[in-house]
Image (cartoon, rainbow over all chains, first blue to last red):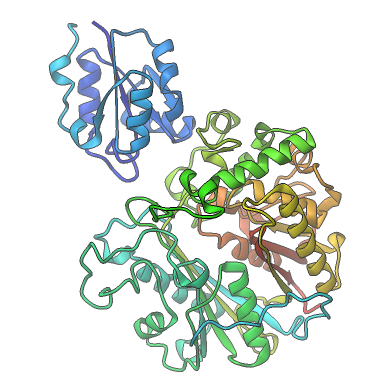
Length: 118
Length: 430
């Protein structure tokens, strides 16, 4: 079962500005558990790439926040989740049929229990 | 001191300014730039940053605190001294003095700054200044009028956690009912841009060369948000993938709110001779303020207002577009810049031609260096690069941003089409 985890950056990831509660180790662990990982943020795409480079991880996708729906068409999966700290995050997730976690919930790694079989 | 009125030069026809070339910018200082204040770091409050900027400006000018006899500021960076972001209290508790009120947290008054910096010889205080261009203009007028001789001009722009520049009311009446539901200024500016694009057969994406160049210039500004926090080169792909905020405005056409402060020293041309830096003489200032003819500002309003102000500035300064070496038109919403370039006719740009102009060479190295300081798009919403950059260009100390063309006269213009001031700077008294 393929599951997409889409991370907002600022206010969500620890490398964001402001820093969020989702650490690089959590993102790496998600990748190691077989989740398809990427970012969906209002940051420029080049800046998102830079964040992934700092985490020393290769994302399966990056997208601007309003392009979350494109992730669904570009990355085939059985389930899609987005997490973020803003109403906009919630709205785009709902609009495009993604499950949603607020940033503080995401910092508890709620996806662990959903881990795809690897 | 209450808000002063009637100092503006805004009644046509205007004679040449009586203090032309007799007042000068002699110092500038900047704090670091953060995205927001975290609510905890007391060395990064708006007050702390304003002290840093003021000290740096005095050091830059080579003056002692006891030489300063005037301070004029816009405590929150907005007209009337209002903070542009949220207030700290009353929901959140204040701190020990000097942070036991909004003063020092979301605004910085002249009185607060003088107390913290032990500026004991201040005879002129004014904490009711307007936005940056008007503030510099008013300070120049004060010094020229002899009301103070060495004037500090701090400009703090704060940003706290949470929402920014909201319209907090639950009801919107009159024209506000058409705009407030969509956020401050956004629907109106998007609407005006839509009219512009239809009238002149252009579109949003043709803004890309301008935004990319501003971001590139901004990376060369040491205090800019992007140089210090997001130094990746900004690309056309980045711009074209920006989220619409109010179509035709994307998120990359709107400046990013930041926490920062700057400060300037303005004095008489005579006094400037003894100071550390080469003076930048102020040749002219003019102001204007307008109201839309209807509920919503239209392109017709915008173009008419900008034309009136440009003509006023040319008449008052006794100069024309060919006299401007370096032009810095404001870009808080990036679409403002095109209206200003066209009304001022800089480099021969006529109505509807700004996007063609952007497609040419507007680089620092080229013949038409535009917003060499990066503007707000390239530095964050602090605005102060519009004063610091032309200063440094005319002083020949802009470093990697130094233009290759002659840099003797600079014009900086802002803020809104309907509420603007134009400043003429020169490397000579004129």
